[in-house]
Length: 387
Image (cartoon, rainbow, N blue to C red):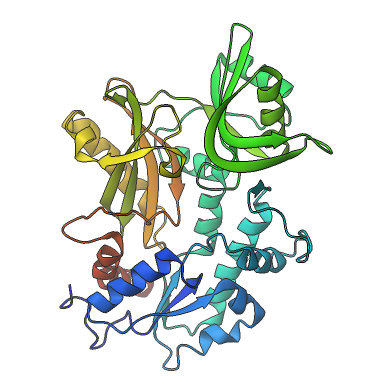
């Protein structure tokens, strides 16, 4: 790895990470640089950058190097800075929301895209950035991401029109002939606020980590990090509150199960090629690891799938990654359906490379990115020259 990305003339030097200080992602990538024999990265957090954008340009005194764009993480200070950058108004800083409260994240999405766009305009022309502002904004928006994957020819669940209330959603479900759907906050991550909704024989059940607190309007939502089944009127109130914050609704597609546990994959594609994958198994349809899902070796699922099915899934990963040529990596949430013969994509993530304890060709996700970056940068430069 050091031979490919060594210090002499490396396009990765100097490297600046625009993200959050002490974040596991930034630390992981920085450690990978050092293991490759490169100088450590400098980290500039989004709040300090938004306060004085010229700080970023000053970190490239020779007008060359790498700018790694990272997830802003959950730091409230960074969130407020990005929301201000988007020109939105949020709760006063002396009266912060409880950390569990779920809010519509449209302002955060706009602020992050604005910050990435500003970073591109601020750095010298010779700097290579790992992410594109437009692509990050599209992937952060579940409705737009679903549309983009469908347009790229990927198999995705059937989407329902936007609904502002449970009553409207119920009408849409009946019209579509669906009794089970996923209701997802349009902007958000980590399954926070997602509800798996089933309506059958007069019974209404919603599985979610969100808790609804009655109050003004549709009340408030809080992320509990614990899945619970809500029934009847309680489920209706919960779904009403999620829909009121703007939600993407899609068909609940049953996933293949291993030993009775539904499962799906997080697949990381780096420089256009699939790399790391982790299998997630759970007792129900929501498999996120921080909500009780457990990890397993992706080969466990691969051995159960026909080779052609697995390769078709990987080919679709490549196909969609090719639509994001200015993003070094993209991560997919994808599953095989019951019977193991078809696959379905649920989401694509711009910052989905925090995959622990998994190696590909002997490398962790950040080492893999460092190893593939020189060729990816060379290809981008060649593409610009050809244009």
